[in-house]
Image (cartoon, rainbow, N blue to C red; front, side):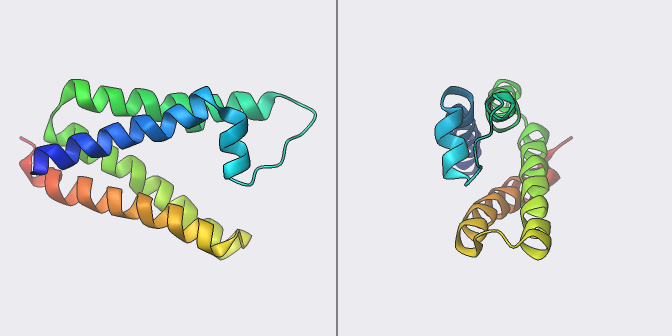
Length: 120
């Protein structure tokens, strides 16, 4: 069961990343990011919201070790922390921020707590 949930978390990471990688305008809109006259925002979507998550999820599946899955949890812990700080300082739409943050926190907790003690 643990292995299956780890793989699902890595596949979700790839899936989340594919939105930013392949559909950056859609992703920016879903995240309430306003377009500008520059296409640099699309580049950032493809890079930080897209490619980073696609490659991280793929690397975790390729390595397929408890430490790799735990490190994916650390990545999600960082995103959840950023989201929490944003809620406190930036006043984003609360429901959307808490929904995304809740998903990130759940993935972080699962991946870290289940895998960290299995690492050699």
